[in-house]
Length: 67
Image (cartoon, rainbow, N blue to C red; front, side, top):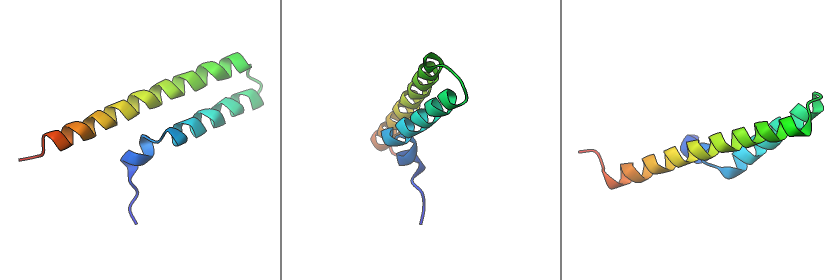
């Protein structure tokens, strides 16, 4: 069984879960909800960038196959 890392890294469910977990851990550790919101926003922005880059790479790879 192989793991499809491209699909995993572009999964919105994964990134929302990671962001929610980190946000809750910040609040649990005594951080404010404002700090939590900033970190969650940063994680989601990074996830969006990673997903876009991988998606565009896949589109380009299918458009221009290796010769």
